[in-house]
Image (cartoon, rainbow, N blue to C red; front, side, top):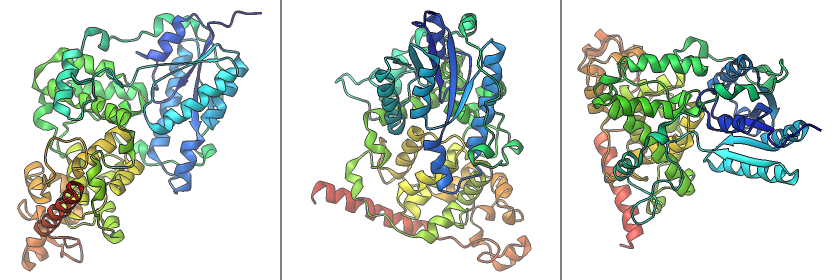
Length: 483
């Protein structure tokens, strides 16, 4: 009988690459043989199908990444076993079939993923198969960073300072794979399901500047390094190529977080330091979700569960579809609908508008982003929405309310971004394009855009809505204080 004590099955999830991969490294170091598997999990996909999301860019993107991952593994002498079914069934069954000693994967932190992993671990244990897992998608996880009192951080700046102080070269070290690749077992070819096999349809992904796989991530990262020194100055302007555009690749692990943080930390300078701060924000929200899982459904600050939100379906749909009458908000929402991407500054502006101008529950906006963002990540999405709604872990007071017009004037001064996604406003001058309802009738006629007919009038008056939001928060705070 062959010795199978070192045989491993590496389960790829949100880590679709063959370089600097913790689980794959440790499995290969055990000596092999090492098989690799990816499961198109129907527990996740069927929920999308039930909600009518047959054309989902993320599914198409993931499949393209999985195809490239299989090719990369075959170039190393291995290959990828691909399954379409319930992961909690497919992984134990495959592990038994292959006779491995352990299933190896990288940590996940979301409640649903933790429950799935617990089911898999229990079923594997019944067959005497180990379940090994490693940190891979963050630099610091769980309890690795705590306050001096031994408690989780709830404010970002102290967390960032502790993160930077605790960082060592070990935390940024790559986990090598290629030099151990001789332990890979060859997988049978031809088991890749099509989109149609899984019940999905092609999207416009091929027309977007979003190359999939590790090759796509590498190309975007190389391009970003050419402009990273300008990142601090350029990142807030949606019409400027300022961001890295790597968020979707971080979400699905086609590039290593250690590689990105290592480059930013070594490079130094205002741009790289600011970008490293964004990567630290990502770690921060992961540890918030880990320590406070209730945030997935409720306010981080429980006193704001008493907030009385406005229930207005028509206004919510107008926000989703970019028909609020506020050009920057509408351009942002239309960008999301057309591409699955929204600029980070605009995520804050749009979220603030929904929660503080329209008074609609942040959870509705969070759910909409979860369904439409290519880079949707529960920890970051939830953290960002609660930050904007002032229900989350933010040192700023709840009366911070973005003015959508002044934000537009400051970050899209010449209206270039607005005109791209709201072409009906293209002929307004740089003054009126931010608030076209203020244009006179002759100005509207000259621009070929009548407000209320060709472009909607504002859903709300910002000043009035701001006052209503202040009262809403005062009432909730008073109820929590018993006053």
